[in-house]
Length: 162
Image (cartoon, rainbow, N blue to C red; front, side, top):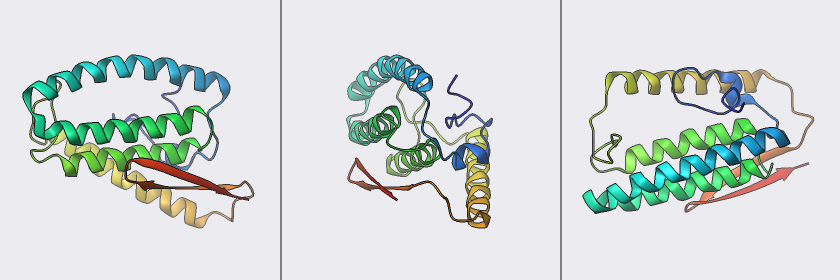
C-alpha cells in the first residue's frame, strides 16, 4: 500500500515520489506503522550482530536508526509530506554510507564493498533527485503551506510556512 509513495531504493522509484506534496492518508499511516514494527524487529537483530562483530560501526548505525525513527515519526503523524520524507531518507542513507569507515554492510552486519548494482542505484537516485529539482524549479509557487526540515544532530526539526 505504501510502496507506491515511499522511497524503496530498489530501482523502481520515480521523481514523483520526491515531489509528493501530501502527507500519508490515515490508512497509509496505519500500514506504515505495521511495516515499521516489522522493520524494527529485523533492525534489532542486525544491530545485535553488529554490536558483537564490529563495535566501531555500531555508533554510526545507531545514528542512522535514530534518524530513521525521526523520519518515521514525522511521517506517521502527518507532520511532513511524503516527498520530503523520501528526500530525508535518501540523505540519511548517504550519511550512513559516508560515515561507515569500511563502507556499507552486508546482511550479516559485516563490511562489504560497493557492488555494481549499488553504484547503479546510486546514480539513478542522483538522476531522480536532479530531475525532481528541475521539475520543482519549473513549478509555480505552491498554494499549500511549505514544510522545511533540517537536522540538528540526529533530531529532525520541521516547520511549515503558511
